[in-house]
Image 1 (cartoon, rainbow, N blue to C red):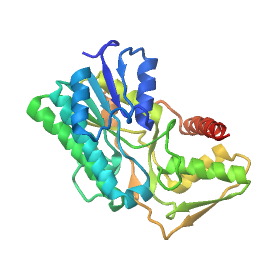
Image 2: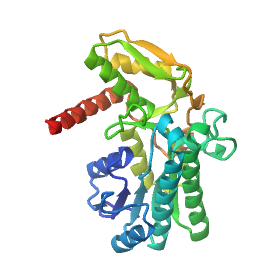
Image 3: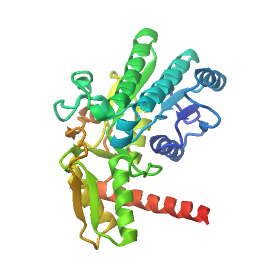
Length: 319
């Protein structure tokens, strides 16, 4: 039974999702939260991870640490993505088991599902078709993490569950235009237009792919919610159940960031679109009593304000 005094380890607390889980736990009054920086603990080092968990003996682990990126980095650094993510997952999950940790939540990704599967995507569609080629290395690593959790549950009766989030955005995101996901990339591009006083936005593909997004505070809330919830299933989708095209997102973000400018959107059709559509079926999460809380436009504005704060901090440090 997890209480406010239980020792909870967040692997990846400096990242987008891990940081939001940390903020959510603190807000809810959890007092015994364990974190460690990458400099002090390299999660790709099995020996060090095992020693750390045996010494600290957490009651619960959130495995939010991962190497992530957008379509460009997933295509161009496949070896890095599969090696780093497999290493982190193998080390943390197996070391958790060997250290006697009964409860763990593993953060997966909606990209684990087949490229052309039926929409909305149910948890049962896993491994029922071919993956999207642009991010298959990352997806395969995440699938391995899911199967590892399931295998330890079956063989050792552990309670290792897998949360499958849709595209996530919010505070602590990566805003690199090439290596980030599409929402932070759009924020960065539109902010640059604002600074340069220009009105032409250039995007990859033709703008037709449809995507679902979730504010990171909603995802963190779901992680903490299911930390305390008993479930029969070990895979649970987390999203909003709504999707929009990339073109529609570009218009929504343009209206939030550049409300007084009519932005001209140009698409580079020589670049890949990625998966044509990806929206999760979240009926299982809803059956357990969870549902998203945040409005899309309000959460984009809040994220943009975080981006402005971060930008101002970086500029002040350079002076």
